[in-house]
Length: 115
Image (cartoon, rainbow, N blue to C red; front, side, top):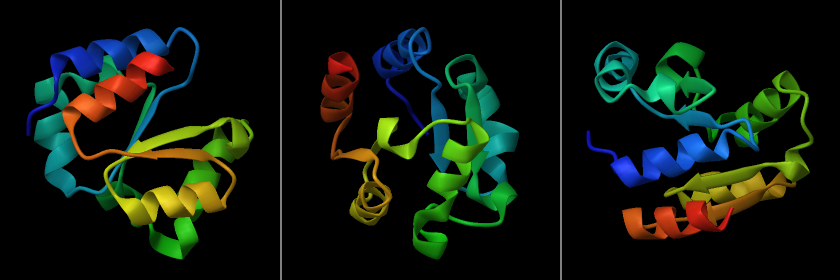
C-alpha cells in the first residue's frame, strides 16, 4: 500500500485544528504491517480497522461514524469525511456530516489543502 507523503503531511498539519481519524475497511494485516510500515500513528489521532472493530463503515447505516463522533464528544455535523466509497459518503452525509467523495490522490490533496 502506498500513501502520498504530501497527503500525510497535510493530514498531520490538520491535527493542529482537528482530531483526525482514519477509519478503514481492512484485514488484520493493516494493523500488523501497513500502519507500522507507513508510521500512520504519527499522522492520525485514532485509527479504526474494520477487522478489529468487527464491523465496517457501511454496517448498520454507518453507525460507526456516530460512534466515533460520540466517543470524541463532537457533533457529527462538524465532522468531515474524505472517502473513495460513495456509499460511505452517503451514509455519513445522512447522519449530518459533510463528505467528499474522491477518486484520486490529487483530489484528496486538493480537499485537504482547502480545510
